[in-house]
Length: 117
Image (cartoon, rainbow, N blue to C red; front, side, top):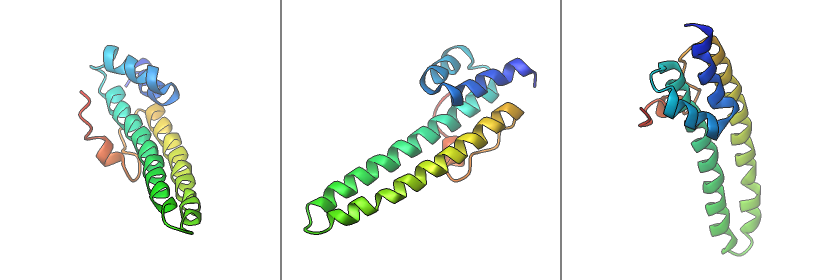
């Protein structure tokens, strides 16, 4: 792959929303960029879902007497998910720079099946 074809794949990681829109509108024929678009969107969804799931569980636990402390303690799982997300982001960025289509660990296979064409 030539150097310019890797640039859109890197942009989806560095500038998430604008990069996603750029690749989706202007670079659909670039299979490497579309692959990394799916991976980047999957990473974003993973992080959002982990935060929302914690918020729902913590809110439900807050209604049970003395269980709100457990909800606060579960926030460590969100911190771990975000640390994992930072490592996955670096791996995705390196794969895009190298021109590789390697799925991100954990959720990458699911993300590669996202209906983005």
